[in-house]
Length: 208
Image (cartoon, rainbow, N blue to C red):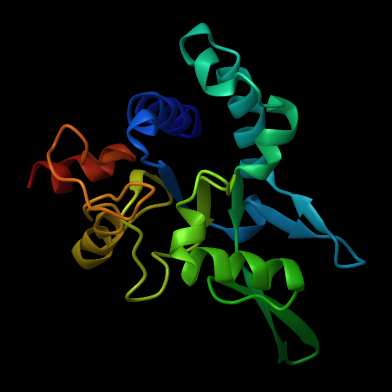
């Protein structure tokens, strides 16, 4: 339901803001990397529950009459895979007789992970271009300190945000003034509104 609501809010804002030259981004914070992406014995990526749910909901909502104008010349089946991504590297550590894999929200080891890392962390202009299909970013933590993108309009917290600092850091990722395709910052609450999709435990923090 939270994933569905985030996609719905994304489409609503895209419908309204894309004509103004504003690319809309949504950010998901997840509780476990393997729920979004796994690796088989050969090291190939396998979709986790969140990725599968996201693509199903994206395809279903994209067919809704209210959003048809967003997908006039788009193959929704293919687009559902192209519009989302995350970057997660694996640290393998020897613990006694076992190898423990620790997923981290940092730069990956593969070429695909490197490309995603560069796009999200370094190439802001390319990410904000309509030519780049990526719009939904999955992250295990609040991304590293200093990361920001002015066009994050939705934040979905699929994990508990325990401390006040962590919650502030989380919503801080969506509190920048957005920019259009020319890189000009746009002001006004009618454009700069952040939607946070979270659990009930977030309510008191939001009220404060």
